[in-house]
Length: 222
Image (cartoon, helix red, strand yellow):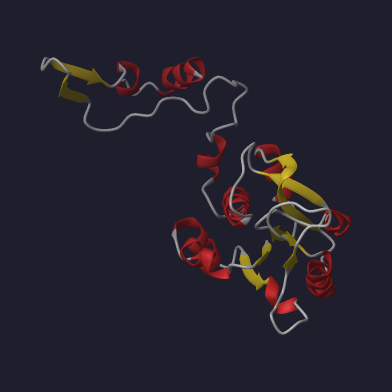
């Protein structure tokens, strides 16, 4: 899987790409991530990538011509199974189903916005628009990281298959995302607000060693 990120703040991704599962997946060549600075495709000496909106209004808007040149340049290496994704609050909300669909692609080009967003004509040159939630962020960089992390976890050999089978959202229940988890100590003692000693114990079924019963319990509590 090849991820290509278009942004005006390339260094935002520095620590993200050097940490945990993403780093290991890169080192094992299971994914390839390339960061592109949008200003590289600006044509004036000031490297302008945005301008004031027609009709007035606050802030600046990303120019259609700059992003068009960027996408045209990257598409010289167009893959058959690729998707160009505009990361925008107006997009379809990202979920696990979308992640699974995108994980079948060979290449994803993620376009990160900033300021007041994009010239609306940019939408003509992308395949889909995605939002990570009903709220406003400073830009598309955090959504890009979200997509990369969620999709990378679904790729073959990145994570053990057993772990993926018990992942959140794999069950039919919509009440809880995942069954309750416990680890040592078996009994945890603490003082409540009045100073009285209280204990919290691990459910006995999890200590029984009866895997069939444990599986049944996990399905019930979801």
